[in-house]
Image (cartoon, rainbow, N blue to C red; front, side, top):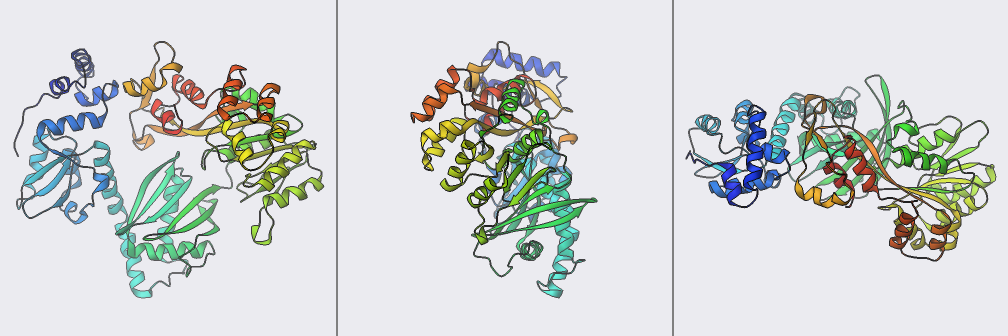
Length: 556
């Protein structure tokens, strides 16, 4: 292996990526930390550069190729020849070989001693070094650990398959043990969803934790076939039908608690993609004050939901916490004096003092049909799980105009877009303006882990995007990653919201059928609307979340 002397700081200055002053500042910070961090890490923490910028500059200087490890097929047989601890010390991944060399990706090509030790373990061929991002190297290490930890139970499943074929319906079968292991792991991690996805060579299991997918297991396709069949049996699905999407539901007891699982399958190129939504029936309903509403927004929302009639709409994509907010709102206003009816698909959590109804489209009992029957039940408050069509929207508007408070959800990106969406669905603008009370758009963002929280300076490009909303001398924080947060730097989630309150002037603009931009402008001028990113920036300034996280879920 050829040693090349390279001063990273001088190289970055020479390429114009940082100034001499920024380099001096970073070197001082590095010295103050007792050289516990490398210069590149300090430059990233100070917001001067991104990891990719540093990696690409270093690759060019050292005449190395840059490799995207997410885009190459890893040779796990080759990886198995190397001790994992030696690989970790060198921050290196042997990802393939040809006749002359072994291809090795590393995020630290200047760590010569560790790389030479790794090279001495295989005397047959020399190394050809490539540069890769540290995050991608860590991801490969996680995969290796996953494969190692599940090796025993996978061997048991394969033995069972070879002896019984795919008849794996026994309660003590290895396949069911494997399913329980996967689900238990997801529950203990606090996951909201499980994704089981086949590709050409293997099956990947990913868990959505705090809104972000994490790879948790990796199996070959032989295991996938048995696993998919057994999960479909659990959900009462047709195991012979693999060409159409199917939905089901089942219940399992994990760690002494009962969980419901909403099951969805859809055919893909390499097999059926299986997704399970995890519902904890013993989960305590959050109070309005615990959801994450900032004080002013909470006051507006509470005032809105205590109105006697009108429509309150919650908008946002799937998984943005709309149902949780709706349940919290219903929990806030329910009482012995109120009759509250809900129509849901499906009923996720059971609420006391509330009559909950399940949609059954097979027999024609849709949202719209249920809503019509509700009006004969003398309700005070109605909750419609989702407005999907004109018929449901029209029935909701009529219910609100006849003295009922109606809660519902709609899929739009922001609050003003909900008005345009309702017009597109066919409702007359004057009916929208007469019936709407408020529109709440929301997203869930990850909170900084309190155990590894530290002050940082975001990258200059990020700061430029949000500069108009920042106060003077802002402070930013992030989690550096620790065992408490599984090295993610985040723990738990909170809401960021925007509320469009419909006052008389905004209602008139809606009736005049103006554009969503005009509605947003007028409402903002009148102080009844502020953008979601503003709520996000307030939470960043309070040290609750990071700027990267806000920009991940909102548009600046």
